[in-house]
Length: 201
Image 1 (cartoon, rainbow, N blue to C red):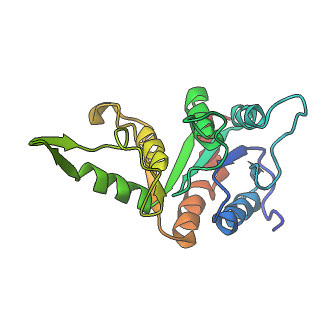
Image 2: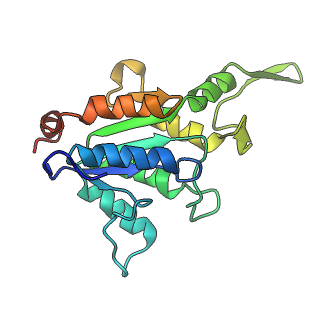
Image 3: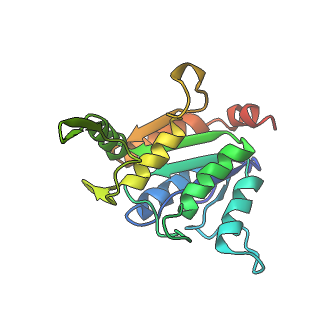
């Protein structure tokens, strides 16, 4: 889809897994492009490449060069895990966006917080002692088609490690379908001047 608005030169980075998400990713890209944004996304091939850098560093550098970050937390964690028991490239992109402190818009598949709620409400009794479960003390990779590492990323984004009264920048929008995603993206990005104020540009 070609842009229908003048280019506003605001760079927006989209972080997302690709598996089972391509059509949604394509639509989000097209909507943002139609609003005049410069959209950076590895799936679409718009990350600035450098043959002297690793894929990880190319992605992290792109986050640093962007003005705004959009991150999708889906049920799949992503295949770009470079070290055993390490974090995926997508996860590291989320953390880099927090580190460089650019405006963040985070969305999550509704199943991720649902699984978190299920885990938090589950108790195990072992030898008469009650053991409370959380995303850190279980090692299963998937439960009801959700990778537990996605729950950990979600908890990181809603900042469960910080007392509720002290949390800022922890809004994570749930979605069930493409319509939910586009409604949120359009409502947040339809007017670039609002985004300019957020980034001070």
